[in-house]
Image (cartoon, rainbow, N blue to C red; front, side, top):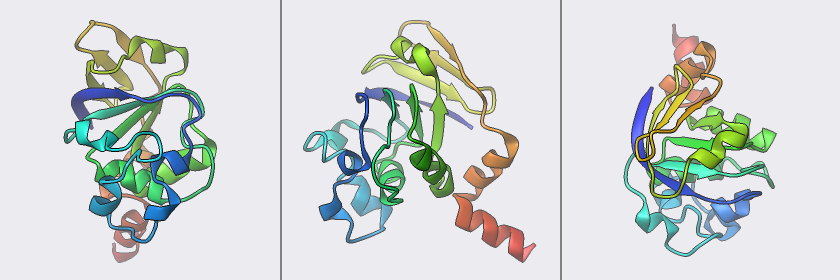
Length: 164
C-alpha cells in the first residue's frame, strides 16, 4: 500500500480518550467518529485533515482504554496510516484489527514534522519526507497483516476466509 499526504503531528502519550472522547462513543459509524477525531486533544482538529493525510505521533500513542472506536475514528477522518515513535500494545493490535496501518519508527520520528508531505510505502517499510528529502526506514507490514488490512480489518478477513 502506498499513501501520500500531509503530516499531522501529535505528541507523546496520546490516549484513546484524546483520540475519541467517551461522550462520542454512542456510535461505531466511521464518518460520525471521524468528525470528532482528536476532539479530546483539540476542538476541530479534524478540520485540517484531508483524505489520505498521515498522522505522526510520539511515544506510546493510543495508551489508555482498549476501545476500538479510536482507530475507527482515525480511519473515519480519512487517515489510513499512523506513524509513531511507539504505540501502546492494545492500540497497535486494535488498529490492525480495524484496518488502520500503524508504523513504528522509533527515534526517526524527529525526521517528520507537522505539515510535511510524506510518501509511505507499507510493503517496503519506507517513509519519504517529500518536503525535506529525509528517508525513514521501518519494519514493513508483514504479508499476513497486509491481508487483514486489505480485507478492511480482522472481521472482514475472517468472513472472507470462512466463505472460501
